[in-house]
Length: 275
Figure (cartoon, rainbow, N blue to C red):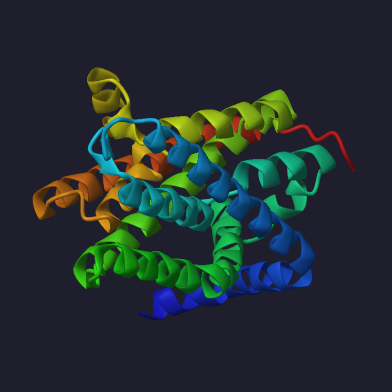
């Protein structure tokens, strides 16, 4: 217990800094949030057009009501699990400030992690509860009964937290590539587009060809978005949920181990372009 207390005392300032940064740049936070919500509504109208043009009330096993829930819970999950570790590490390598972070008597990745957790706390307090409440109200009016399932919601929360940790270490691994390539801005755009598609954030994996969907369900990207969302919607049995969360934990362990291996190699190649 004392060890955990010391660990928390070490990284608590980084969490506080993340909270303060999110509060200080309120306009940036609000504009980003509005942009993301607009994207979610654009996807809603796209899928509405798809269902209206279909001769069946269901499409690949989804009703339009299911699709609405999927879209907005996917938006919420993606927002809550988003990590900008790759961008932050790349920027610090470019301007040279990474040297100061490396000489601190604390873990390099953990300082980033607790900083991001601080900003996630602000996000959760402002958007998570209203979004879940809105989705559940929509389900209530559409189905005429309360569809909220506390057990599935708890499992969704567990899965979403693991998804965030996978996202964080994946982006840390990608960010360490800046030690070799110096600037990741262009490739980051490609990476984010690919991850959105492979994770089911753009198109549900169930809509893809069977073989491709089976492969993508095993890869770590499905653990970032598709798995938590499908758990929330009650699309998985308890046995399948246990398998999916176990797979998430496996990929988390892999990403953590890979980040350590890349760090050991990358730190020997450090050369900054700034001060």
